Length: 622
Image (cartoon, rainbow, N blue to C red):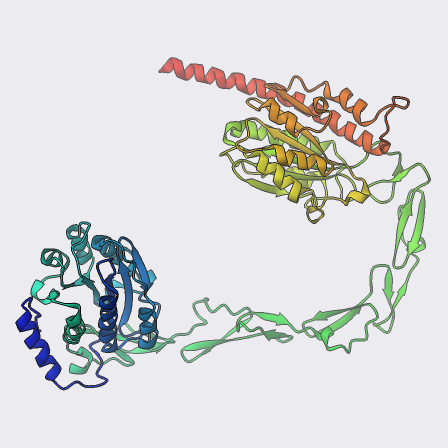
């Protein structure tokens, strides 16, 4: 193997001789696959025309290689004070694409951190994720480092680690490069892996000689390999590979077709049909294969436009049938529909009056009474309905045992509500350092469903971002998309915020927006909650919409204050007129909430006493 010595006269003589030899125009290196990564110095000391010479050096070497996914793979990185990946071993597999990427490199023009570049080569560039072939395939991993200066960091230790990891390092120094640093980087024997080129003008000529070091004997050509499909040459041996759709047998030479349907990984939704070395997906009768060639969709026979159904056409795997809308009956011709007077033909259950509509019916109540949530019964408006969103604190300071009490508190409130799609709707939001909708207003339609979902809520822990929770409630929780009734329906919107500590973000803006949007805000604080924050959250009059206490004992006064404020008696000079149903609903909600909070007060007090007793026992043992 030729050696390029750091002696200018001899170097020039060698290069002159090299130039005088015949040059085959399209000779490629075909020894077998290689994984090669160029590591190019683009520090500020490399001038623009010198960097252009380094580009040509890389392209000349790449031009001599047999590149491809199963042949030689090439990657390029440049470095100065940082490392930049130009393209990895898995990016390009044609010489044209590689040359285009190399020509687009913009030098970094900073320091010379060669050790950092070697670390990147070892940890990133030669990983299988970046395209390097697995080590067991024994494909050489070659790093070609080209530098013009002395490294500004340590290279000896990291270069040793890289070599021990199976990377063969060639160190090419130009002009001012430090020979000791080159020797510290390169693989042994050093005389075959260390080169010092006197000038940038000579590096391109040096590249033609360097190609010989990457090309050796093609073992697949030199001996009888016996591979049935493909022989892959390595520097000292070879191995066999099979064509796609085949697997290598235990003899390491012959191949057998793979039955892709057997392993269950074909992805066919209906049927897998094995072919030689591959497979095809088929669909059952009445279905067609989608563009992904795996999944199947039912043929929509109704879309053909010849069904003649008066109301609805329903496709089935082998045809279609006609269906009438609710309140209509399919006629003997199996196509036309006739409406029925459901008030006379069904047990409608209306308490007062049934009114037929096209294909359906509705119940009506006498004047002064309202239709209940079941859509059938009539009663006075004492039970009223609201859209209620509870925003509970799940921060770390609450602690798991108290969080379970909070969930019980939520369910005690739910027990006292008439939950239904047309009655009271309940949503739940938990917050800590982030905000999570546990379920929106339109998720569940019964108290049992809500209570079950509440008990399955997982404790968040972490911080206390009350302002973020208020923002989420205003923008999402009371949107019609998540189940809030339109404002025109005059269904009261109530937000109940439960917190045990100071907010880590600002709450003023979104507390104001909540109230401006028509939400009646209640603030309940416990433990280290800040009274000023609770007042900022609560609706006017503030005293009737917030409570703060270590044990909830100051909550009982809210009922009367709330009733006097929301439902003023006649003759008091109040100008706002509210629906009595709305007022009584809010009062009922407030009364129930206070009762639940008083019950929780006792439980928390008991638990606190037990915790204090345990802490004393632990302290005494110490």
